[in-house]
Length: 504
Image (cartoon, rainbow, N blue to C red; front, side, top):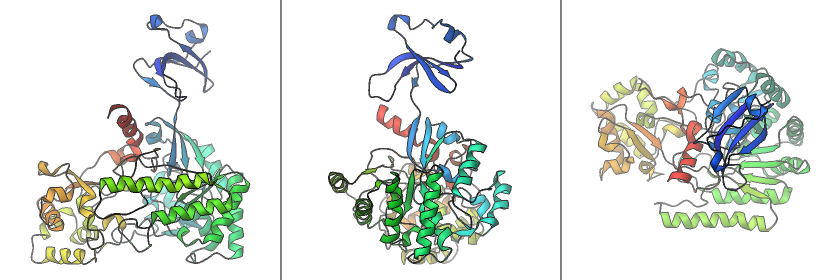
């Protein structure tokens, strides 16, 4: 007896073979039988006892039936405790998330909790965000016990774990919408071992504590380690620390993933040193013997101004570094974010680029009005042009002095002047100085909306997002203040990739 009959769909089984129409029978949560449908039998129904006893029938005619997709780079472990249904994952056909990347993770947290964005509503009840919003490359840390009650108040879910095993036990008991394959985040392990004094090399005692944490995580289901070498506290880890931990993984035949080093800590503009960071990680893989995986690989060279032909050549040179490492025996793989628009969250209002000024004025409409008064606007322009933007948050700050192409990185998606929609800020300015033009636009319409662009080569897709609820990223209602919003890739990344591959 089948509990489910998926009837008449086109089966694409993932082997590379041609698709075929079939009835698929599911029993005890597993595929029990696949019956191919001959062309002359398309309108017939399998009348076997197996089919007749099916509890539920899904009519899949005209649709594809495939194995569940595997997302190779996810941060859903950081948000699954708040949103265990994982609707944004399942809605894209993803049934398995490879998560825990970039050094992040929600365990161990016996002493401290490192902020990871999805828990914003709880975290902000403990300490406020910096002016202008969070800079993701810095660390925002509170004692874990301070967060437990606000977490439950904010999400109606309990933060009742401290160790890695307690977290996995919590999620097994709570239940999840999809499967999680986890790597253990280096950042939380380093924080528990070193406390808030992490801007230095670890001592032998601290290294041993991190090794013990990693072994404990792998004992409880983690398949390896993830590094976030652009972020605090992981960015302060030296070669000895990284090799010690990677050798633990190698001995257990696990895998090490890395957000490799790509920027100076104080720099708020484009990445500068990705190729050096890539080579560093490859060398660590060679010395440790561990299998390594480069997260969301990007062009190893930065060019100003951008040029499509030079970018294509630079991408080839970057891939050659990886291929050379493979020939030398380094077991290295990589994934890519396959879309120009990027970011796990963003500020949909153009006013978000001026967030401290907007908050000082009391909201977007008041900011718009004050731009027309006296020298207020001139003062803002002077500060920003000189590199002294009032915001320290990377998502609400831009620096024309360091990044002359800042105005090509955002596309206008909503404006009272509809001729502006679909253009970058520079294109819309049509020869006028871009900062002045943008303030002109906001003076007329405080609710201009934008979307960020990021140029990355297209290859094996990852989603690099948290799980989300539909109402969070999909809708946007202009309000009095600038607001942060989950980016659409949390909801529709894979659907967009499939559309591009099959239709465009």
